[in-house]
Image 1 (cartoon, helix red, strand yellow):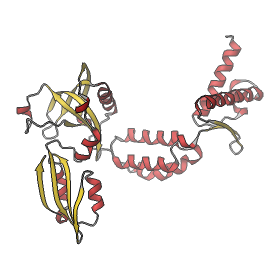
Image 2: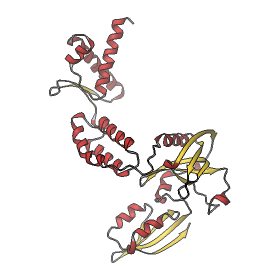
Image 3: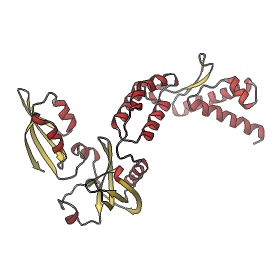
Image 4: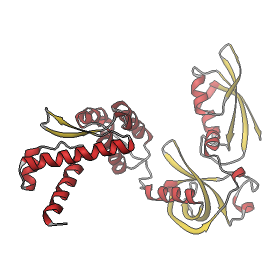
Length: 321
């Protein structure tokens, strides 16, 4: 490949990169940047157009190169069905902000990337304006920890059935403990991400209130100071595989413990809120605004929620399953 051909290829790739990043390509500006005439840039644009048409023929995905008369340049218009709508991006950003799951720098970077990558350039200011007040007043979690790297390693271990070693700070006395885990799932609930897994090489009689508890242990990921992937793998028979969705429905409050069936009377204004808060809940009976509700939950974490309901929840009965 001679120098002229190499220069041309680099120029075309640079123009293509500009387009894929959502920028408008102006022929005169590009000609000046690369030291060529406008006709050369026009030929480059046509080469990119033919490339996009060939890709559409092969994979059926249409990316159209159009001339924007208002912007006085070419831009890439991607198929709407492959992109989040303005409304969807706004909703996702609002949920992220309300989660308060990340320290401020991480949260702001995620929001900016979502808007930049998913919202057409002409609408980005409007979406950013709708988010600006919440971004300004955003309060990060008190732990102040960055943990995405450890969460990613945990996800890798789950996918590969790899044993991990963690250094963990306990909630009650902040003591540092070391654990070998068979990681099973990553969950999110009320500001925090959690890692679910079985502990290896531990005296269950000494460490657990219920040594025969068959269910996994739950760890807050931000309290994991160190996480290492070990070379050992673990196996779980398919019939005994961990069903994250089913577990998640029953562990609403991120406290381990035995599975129990809960029954109580509810007289509050919104039974739908109860059913949403406890996904396994079902109404056994309703009479004059009084609902008899039954649900399955793990551990004692539900006790805090029951108390928060005051007089709206009465006659609570628990039974281990």
